[in-house]
Length: 210
Image (cartoon, rainbow, N blue to C red; front, side):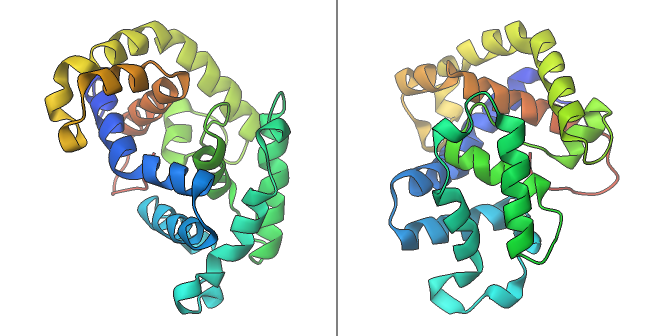
C-alpha cells in the first residue's frame, strides 16, 4: 500500500538509527571482526544472505562473508566518482564469480550503499516494480529512479525538514538538532524516496526491505 512521504521519512529515520547507521559505521571504522559481523547482520536484515551460499559458513570467524568483505575493502570513493553504474556492474561480477555465479545485483547495490552511500542507488525488485523498468536492466532503473526523484525532490526536502519537530518519535529519542542535520543530507532524502517507492509497489506477500 502506498504510504505518505511523511510516513516514509520517519520510517527511514528510524531504520537508519536502528540498523543502517551501525552497518555503515562498522564497515567504515570497525575491526575486521566487526565488519564481518556487520555484513552478516546487514544481509540478514535485508534478507539477501541467501545470495552468499551457507556452505561458506564456519562459525564465529564469519568466513562466509570474508570474500565479499575483501571486495568491498578494495574499493574507494574515487572508484565510484562519475561511474556508479560501471562500479556496480564490475563489483557484482566479482561477487557473483566468488559465490558460484549467482545473481547478486540487489545485494551488490545494498552493500555498496552501506559502504559509500551517495551516489549509489540501491537496486530493489519492489522499487523496480514501482518504476516499471525491465528486470535486471540497471541503466533503465537508474534513469527512471533519478527522473522520478526529481519529480518528488522538493516534497521530500520539505517533509525531511519537518522531522526534527517530531524527534520524540525517533528511535532512542535523539535530539532534534541531530535529526535536523541528518535529514538535510542528500543521501538521506534519497533513501526516504526508496522507502516511498518500496511501499508504492504492488505485492501479494511480504518482501525484502528497501
